Image (cartoon, rainbow, N blue to C red; front, side):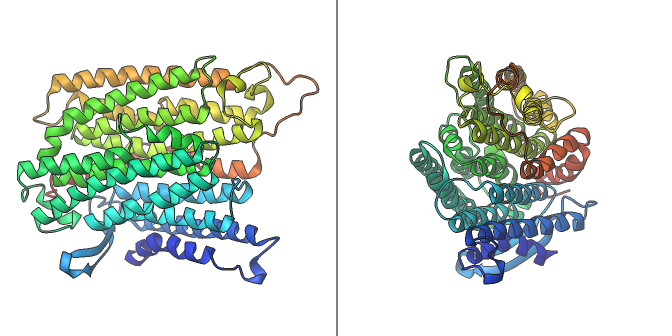
Length: 517
């Protein structure tokens, strides 16, 4: 199993290098471009298959134990080790990354975004996948930082070279915000490693902050937390996200929302909660306050965009909705309770499934109508998807109600558990303050339902297609193949949450207890 995990992390890098080589004559198919796009599907498909095998071989009776581990010395002078492993916290995110990467490669094979050579596109997609997988698998602080940074350059080029209007400015904003956050985060990681005498995340979690003074923990949480908050993104460090999503190609938006945002919240759970508990306890009320501010801000921004006459962009609206949804994740983490942290991890996965599906669907609408402007889509001759593309309209409505947290679908459980965690926060945290945060977050769920239902009404409803108007295509075969797994998993996670919570809960209990369970 340890070799399988190494292959999952390193495989996409080897695939990226192979994508840049000339295709063998017998594999070119109709053209070299088709061959390299097919190569991307094959590589991501093999990685997804390996991730599924890893999940099936995972010892589900001991999800709190690190499994499939590799631990070899890399830089002896700094005691940096190539330490890999997965537990119940990281395994779902690893499989989610492999799944979304494969679906994006499959979608791009049939609908490659306009831009330069597909060779570079596929190579960047695979480097992005490798960096994200490594972030969820490494157990060394320095390796975590390197993997965390690996994803920035490919995402920058995906936005800048294959994006839409305003792509250059959006790409620069993305890279500057995230790099500045990363510099601060690196200082915090180095402080922890030097003061504790090790960069090993498992050893640090087992020590549970006992080797770090309270002042060191506070400084570390402030520095590392800022870097993670930018990537999450937490209000008010979110302003790069709407521009990046609006300009990015469809698959770029899916990966950005589906997996890249999870790297920030994963860092809070994997590093800050167990390594610097006293520092987290100091900042938890502030983190919760920023989280609920993000929930309300994101919802109000979406309501402003969906208002008639506002010329709101549908992709931008979904991006602002991510600010609100990630607010629930941060609120769950800030409670420092098993209930809240489990809710945060569940909401992480649910957001990846549902928002990934939403960006696929919005991209399909934009491809068909040439715009994502809500006023245009809701005009007299606008989208009216129920009458013109009923399957596409039904899927958009499904994704919207899943995103607003309808019981029985994936979006419900994470937000509910995060609010339950705020009802009874960890010892030492102010319960009145967290009850206030819970009430504000609950109000945010009402605002979320309001703007998403308005989106469905404006885009999906309307009169039938006028006589003589050119019909639009409903869901195509390749779209059905790319979207069906996300729909199925959204329903499965909503109806059977124990599948995911059974993995995360023992690992969270051990993490919060400092590895003593």
